[in-house]
Length: 148
Length: 128
Image 1 (cartoon, chains in turn red, orange):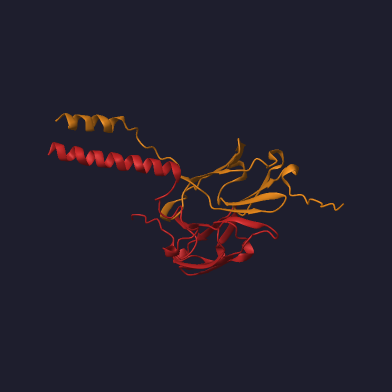
Image 2: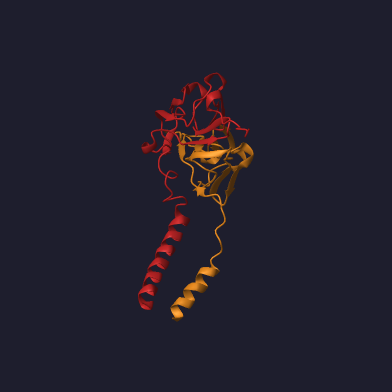
């Protein structure tokens, strides 16, 4: 029993060594959703984070290289749709040495955990991150229940 | 038996992995013309003040940290705080003093002008 465990140990140690070497060469490799293409096809669009702060929802979307004119946001009830396009910013008269960033059009729709008040939605685009503040509809806000 | 004791000791010597920000290589486009090399790097969420650009001994290294603050209960998080980090070799012909950069919509635009000596020159052929 003791000898077999030590063989596993040796195997894992070698794998760890290889992993460390690979991490040094390609930092971030193997971490899903970080190294491959800007948007993962499986997610169908740019990456987003959604937070629930009680009386409003906050959504952050990663949209580097996109101007606000190229983004469209539609909200209805608990349905949110974001679409946009990322144009090429290749300058005229230059030869391309390496192109990793792509151009693309996307549409991503999400079902929010609660209905939002569409009149009070705010959106800001800073440094390539779109921040949406989605206040919840009155009926969806949490209520304090007092014990009679 | 002694193998087991070693295993236990080895685990203790490994320091606890605190929550460090993962390092990631940003995507870049590199273009070149006669007078400069142009580099576009995707670094969304990084503020101008958190970007470092260093040229040392023929190597250009870009760095930037972005922090994503969680606001409230997390429903889902697809991107997180990261440290962008990437190093390139630059040809000796770059005029380091004239490098300039701008940040727009989360994309870092880096201009690396070529020094005069490196610019291509037309050679006149004289016929006698």
